[in-house]
Length: 331
Image 1 (cartoon, rainbow, N blue to C red):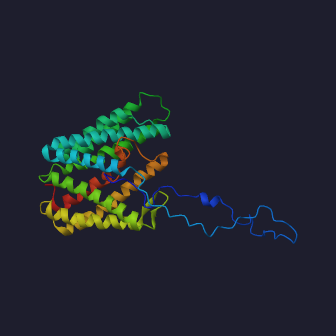
Image 2: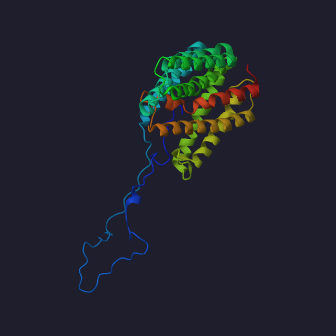
Image 3: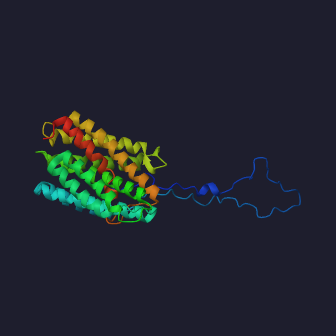
């Protein structure tokens, strides 16, 4: 998720099961409480509630993160992205490559710490940066070639260590290569079109708007859980907010930013972005739950790590790239 803090609709991602531990009646169904007989003093009688005491005030919903820091970091990142995007395209490609390398470092570090999986970082970082550049210079063909060479480099690099754990390490390495840099190459491929900066802005804006709509509507109206076993804070109402916000933003972007774009294309694009961004967010939530962590890192105050901001962007990039090519061509 880009610059909007990933916050639950009810102020927390964990279900509170503590109340289930309290016993308020007999332990077994066929037990009945003992009625004190005449002349018997009941021991430790249960205190009656004091009617003069006011009822406890309901807890206010909490964002769960430092919103001031989150907004400040988000604005700063947005400024860097926009400046590099519209000044020199190659600089923006470099920004994407740096984000990919940092994201790979976070992912491989957490895999090593929590699961003992040692995916080789050096070939992943070099190959990941090469993938982003290849996608910009040679398009999809260059991206696929760089992906294949990176996977081969991961297999060979891991051979320098003992064979124990080889299969799980290289499997995690190939997964990391696909999940982070390969999906990010579609952003650099968007940039090759004549209206490339506008396409990238559309991609980023729709993802941010989708996340914002999910947060705003879910926080205010969310009642029905979307995927409680994966992300208890997400709600069906939040998903509807994401779809509504993204479709409106998509219609405006396609009409006014993209060459030969029309509003109805934007509606379909916004719907697809809301779906892919939500699935991407849930996908990383699955990874983090499996690892037993809240955030992938601490690099960005109020946000977590780089991977915590790329979760909805990465799977959305190929969706936006493909739909723009189908709607208005590769440019």
